[in-house]
Image (cartoon, rainbow, N blue to C red; front, side, top):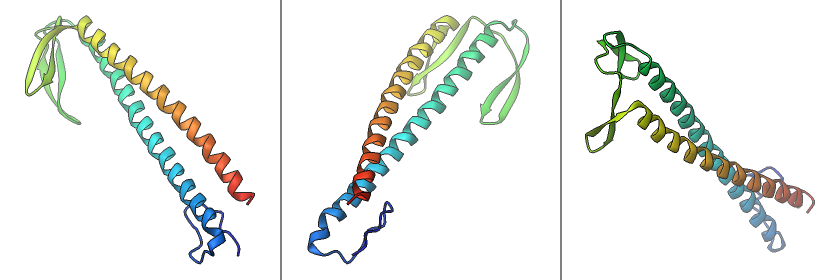
Length: 147
């Protein structure tokens, strides 16, 4: 009986002796899906990291902007309102449940910096897991192909 070596396509007429091969195909498929899921999560975290960098830049820009300057304040994604800057030293930070607190720009930058560091560390951990599981996947595929 010829084995189909492509991930996700196993033979349906397995003889009793081919059950180990079927399990290997399932293991390959499961590990492949796990690597894909980890990669998607890492990509989303990278996007969050990019958003943090944009936010840090925006805070620096607003601090360097004089009071009374006309700015575009976002209402929603791609929707803005013209406004005049009345306060350039404190920012309002949403803390949940409709509550905000006043923080200085440096406090907000520090808070965002801590979040950025945690996110970067989580990305490193994910990248290591992807590397480890990707290596296992390659080993399993090589082992399966040599059967």
